[in-house]
Image (tube, rainbow, N blue to C red; front, side):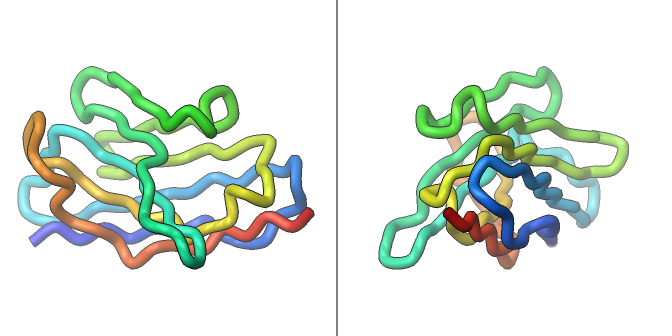
Length: 119
């Protein structure tokens, strides 16, 4: 069973930075891709960024392009989300997830980490 544990959230002023981490554990962890989603109060969970595990293809939602960077460390089974130039509208619970194969659903989810950006 895959377990995903996020860390790195917190309170930051607008314009500041945070780096989220997601550590994965489980037997022969080898996903097709890892992703970050977020959910703000009263809103649906939305896609933020993803990265393929073996060839570094990345994808971002338009609102974070140029500000957020997703990366991975295969040796540590860890994916990161570097968030710069944070805005109050980035405030949300951020979730890590994995995708077993191309085109499959996002299958496992972490417990989430709160990011709050003060104006």
